[in-house]
Length: 113
Picture 1 (cartoon, rainbow, N blue to C red):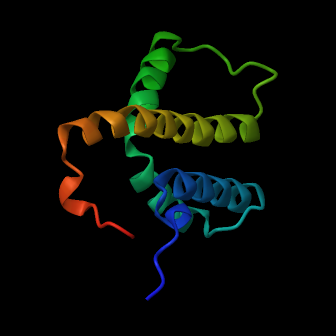
Picture 2 (cartoon, rainbow, N blue to C red):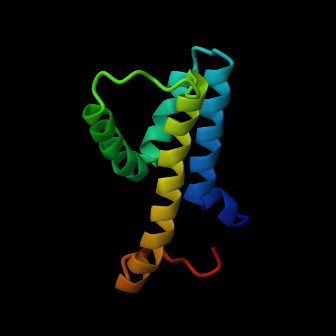
């Protein structure tokens, strides 16, 4: 059996792919963008937690303020998708050396895979 490509096993590849899919489906007005959002949320949960909680606090502080003129709805949607995706990708780069040092991945390492 041929080995699985490391490209397909890379979570950051799937994070980027699902984010692009959600953005394309949403900007085209497709009703299926909600179904693409489910895997995006699951893959980007660390980034969502890291960016959503401060975002809600920031919005709660600025109660009653109107949306800025330069902030269109597509811009806000793009921002709400790209920031958590980027945060998840950065966190995975930070966590990977730490988890490798602890030896937590040793039981899943198969030489030649």
